[in-house]
Image 1: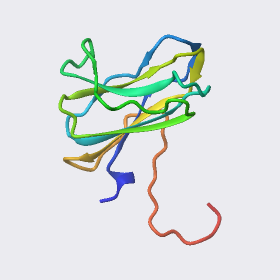
Image 2 (image 1 turned 30 degrees about the vertical axis):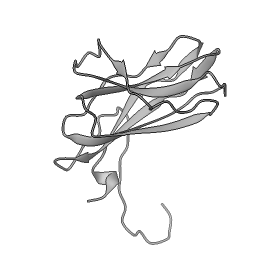
Image 3 (image 1 turned 45 degrees about the vertical axis):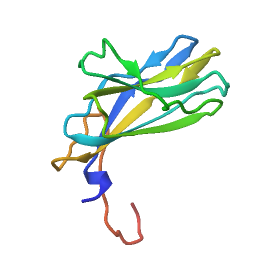
Image 4 (image 1 turned 45 degrees about the horizontal axis):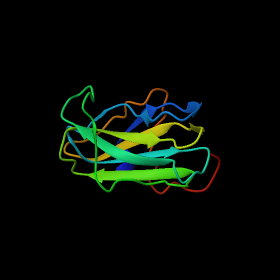
Length: 138
């Protein structure tokens, strides 16, 4: 099995206009998966902008709580934040904007599925996997 055929790709938050309020992604259900990676961008570098992980036992994320030590992307443009074997079933990423900042879309890639094959749930995502193709016109 390879990652491209055994991962689930979700857009968990569309790009957001400039602002200072925190942005929380959609809640991701980790049932059947061991790992998730959140990938996204923050358009303005600032030491007060950062991303951290949250978890909850409720599917609606009503009581999302920050996870200790997961703060990344302070004064960075892009982030990749992974979580292995979360203690609770539902997870999300929170972007804190200390200055007026826009963000790009945030993606969650779930992998290490307990069962395969896996189908992504991202709308309008064309998925293919190629193994050792020969050179030529695509």
